[in-house]
Image (spheres, one colour):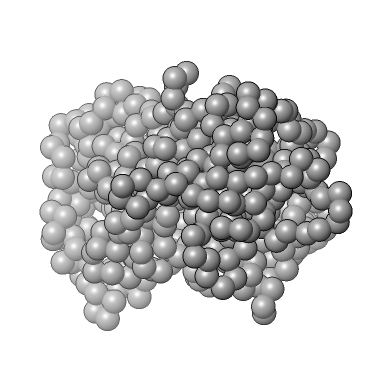
Length: 568
């Protein structure tokens, strides 16, 4: 796969040269034949959880197609199950879609907007002799449905008269029947090889308040019924959904054809996004939250859009990732390393460089003038020199990473060791003279001398050094808490386990409370993402306060995907 980094304007503008895929080929054919004169898509999330990276693919596809063909894309909440829905989820979905860079303008709808119309459609099916009220229990319905190899059998209530069905359905609507005592079912074919066509439920009884309609309704439509008709009501031309709905397409079409809907939408399925080291099921994500395996839906280890935003991922990088993986007809698993590669590519161009030391040890420059403070000029982003420079205080005593010193260096170690000269980033060359240890043998001080003729990190005599270390002045710094995140799961495909919880990575989060960061970050804003020199990308967490900065590690600098791709 060839990776090309898109600019923000290229990602947001309609593109004439968008790579073709089978969905766009269908759309092109429909436009060329005159079957369609305009394109209308929709993104129809259920407000029963937070959106994840798989939804981001669908958002980018639906809104992207509308943008490419100068059409429209609606945001429609499939709020047909009041027992699982919450306004919190509605608000989070709206925030996520906007954050990704898409705008539904004035086209935000709810399936509940159509409850009366959907009820009228159900009554029409009864009057056509195509629906009936069934009083089998849920277990009996499953038993009567048959199996993949055996046909189902008709419900004993299947041949009720139209009048009796209308009367019973009215009782359901008025709340005169208890939950689970009856459902309205379509009358199709109990011997169909497609189990979804074996008299599926259309309406069920739910004596539960709805977050928008309150106690107005005691019956709620099933997804398959509400979805296709909502598409039709909104004038959707292409109903793009994930591959698991392919087997539901005959039912989607049956409702539209039986009700004689004009200009019916066309359902097209594409492969959903699966990522290594994660799960995408909302049910499983909810379990992670409710059982306390993560700290909420926006935990930075979660594959939710909210979690990725909190971790420091950018909308441009996610859009680029979704475009690069493309649209396919067959399910596959995308390497998490490729998503991380896209994030690094974007942040490398955008993130301000900052010096921070996570595991500090003191470095003392013995021949540096006592009390002197210099302002060292450091480049904010070498990939974008228009970002300018900043001033960093340089003093006699500094902090460096403990891992950047080795008393007895191994082969290939090019950092600091006794008698070794290295460069301090943007400052001077220093040479280690001796070290101080405590009574436990732990190094507490590294003593060096510096060459004043190497200011700016270059030598006037042309000599070269192999090691460059980052540093922080021991008298000009802020302390911060650093949260280091790894993959939430330790196995490639946790969904393949009998119990996906068994695949959790016990080391997915570690906390560092000894970090020292240059003073320029004192006024850092929540959500700001920077690159700590040589360490990785870090984002200011929402838990930060005026007295305490907390950073989430977005990603380390090492790009395993790019390295592997280069080899291949």
